[in-house]
Image 1 (cartoon, rainbow, N blue to C red):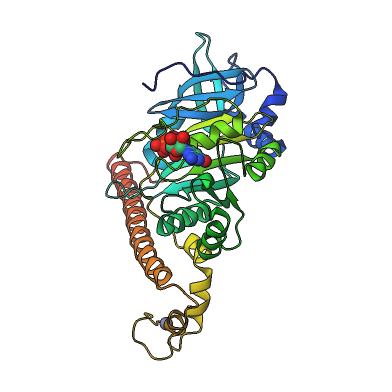
Image 2 (image 1 turned 30 degrees about the horizontal axis):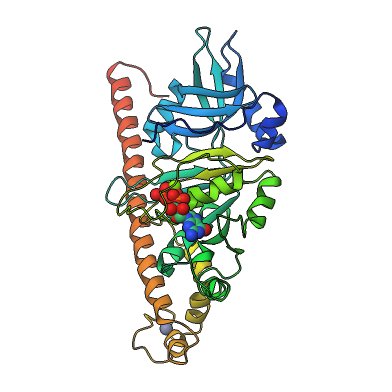
Length: 377
Ligand SMILES: Nc1nc2c(ncn2[C@@H]2O[C@H](COP(=O)(O)OP(=O)(O)OP(=O)(O)O)[C@@H](O)[C@H]2O)c(=O)[nH]1
Ligand SMILES: [Mg+2]
Ligand SMILES: [Zn+2]
């Protein structure tokens, strides 16, 4: 089903369009810094990853779409650090080989990365998107927006280094969209732009369109069925991605299954992602932003290690009692903090393991060199 031919997008053919994808002088310098790995007689050029598979990627550059496999250096880097895997949105150095094949020889250092903790799996996070300027957290206004989910995605957005933004879709399905959106924005997205969209008539897309026209990369994150791909199509003005059939029963079914970067109609890029039921957080910096109000109150508690439970002089409890703070906010904050702290400990443990491995390796090399009668360097 996902292999049905889709309307094809604009094809790149010149350097101008590399710029439209976001390539600037700093990326150019970063690309030049990788020229130590140039292979004589094999031309290298910069390109942006639009889609990934295990060991290979679709990329877009000045010469148009190019399929490339990982070069040896990339394979080695990934073995060392799973987050080094070429990811959607990455700028890479591509090498053309005499047989016409292409390899990714380097991933240019990322400016931002949206990383989710892998629940249950490895302790290393998964890069959902790289070099994103704005993370648009997408949630449907109707039937019932999930505030906890928005908070979680907003924290991930802050953590990424990109600018967070809240997009509330399906504004046509109720009569109080504007008020509801204002309330949600104030509760869980203070200080962030909030859009209310109606995909069918292109309502509420001005803000996102302006970002794209500026050459920005926007990633759409949110649960399945909230309307991310519909939003992407509306922004691009074409059927770039398949969307759920209207009114279809799609319980547990995800329409979008890959993360894909698309060039905007006037430049800029949009990254559509498969619906995520939940994302694990890797750090607490994002939480401090999303829960700045609770954080501020907590600073006023009498005890600095107040659990905001039954302690005397608890400013958080007082705000809940007076109705200034929704209790849900405190519960959500504490839950996400516990989770992020747990994740941080796992990452620490992994780093300690890696350090230990390096020392073991050195000790072995030392012993070997002594045995061979060489003095260690
Ligand atoms: N009424 C209304 N329906 C919308 C709107 N935006 C999206 N939809 C519908 O919502 C359903 C889900 O849309 P998709 O764009 O496929 O959702 P998605 O977030 O991409 O879902 P996944 O790919 O599974 O993550 C489709 O039936 C859309 O037609 C909107 O603004 N108003
Ligand atoms: Mg989709
Ligand atoms: Zn307290």
